[in-house]
Image (cartoon, rainbow, N blue to C red):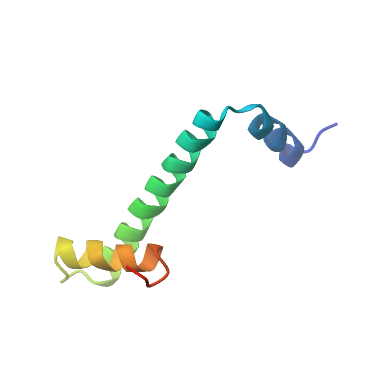
Length: 64
């Protein structure tokens, strides 16, 4: 019997580069949305621009 990890790896191996890119982009967008929500929650007085700036810095490892 295959483990879930083995099945997942097999599915990834069968994906085309375009499919992998679509999945990676979706994961990045989800991570960005979660980061925006977390920063907004921690700093409710911040403007949208401040939240987006902090999100960019956080997601770039402080290099944005």
